[in-house]
Amino acid sequence: MILDKIVPLRGRREPLRLSDVTEPSPGPGEVLIRISACGVCRTELDEIEGRTPPPKLPVIPGHQAVGVVEKTGPGVTRHADGDRVGVAWIFSSCGNCRYCLEGNDNLCQEFRATGRDADGGYAEHLIAKEDYAFPIPDIFTDSEAAPLLCAGAVGYRSLRLAGIGDGQSLGLTGFGASGHLVLKMARHLYPNSGIYVFTRSASEREFAVALGAVWAGDTEELPPVMLDAIIDTTPAWKPVLAALENLNPGGRLVINAIRKEDADKDYLLRLDYTAHLWMEKEIKSVANVSRRDVSEFFLLAAAAGIKPEVEEYPLEDANRALLDLKAGKIKGAKVLAI
Image (tube, rainbow, N blue to C red; front, side):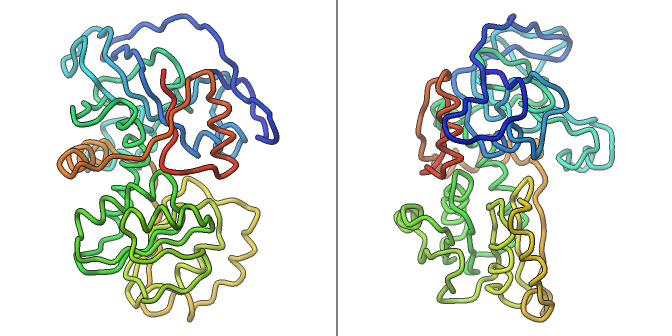
């Protein structure tokens, strides 16, 4: 499924075109993967609508791809034909800068994204760098593993950056693919912590409580207690101010979003130092995912049995999956079965 041009997603518009393309061939240090499943992410909406546009078009979107190594290029030692692997948002980095050497290759100036800077997983085949293809634990099906490569891994990074300990309270603003996996992670890692979910959707609130949230309310509702950390996964500014008001002194807001929309940026004019930032409150953003995030999260998810709720679509229905995501028809994660 190919993106040829930037378009607004309205009505029944179909931004992606089903097409036959030449099967790619792996170069030195690369593997050819036959894809069986690829997750559908909000970042694809941002690419298609031009908020985070690909540097060149056409491009094949998709950055939560799972499949089997079909062919290896010269010099490959990490993988062999038949290995089941996944490819995440991080397609490559320079490997030599300070950030790469520290294990924070997500911050590298030469960071390249799968499905944006290089062809991604909305296809039968994908070329990946061998160092950026991750083994998939046997506990997961292909469709279960796909959302873990982005929603799970970036949720794991968000939870690490939140810096809470067991017994401290955690808020989640927005409850899509990443939010429901963070709730499962937090319940496993911090069994004595209360988890509070903020979302406009009544069905998502019910879903959150069913998964173990102690409370779920609308974005602007006041929780029954003040919170030690909040992870925001929404594309809007309005929930940021609400979250800051709900933090304990010394609390931290982690914004897990690749961008914030301009539609409600006027809310920033309402930022009040005393109400929102006083008492050593912090705001921290999440940028991409590192290889460490993906590898560590898969170990955690396998040990804890953390699996996403999944809704499958055939590859040729990728446009419908994207439009459903745009319309807010969310429960867990959407996956293309290829």
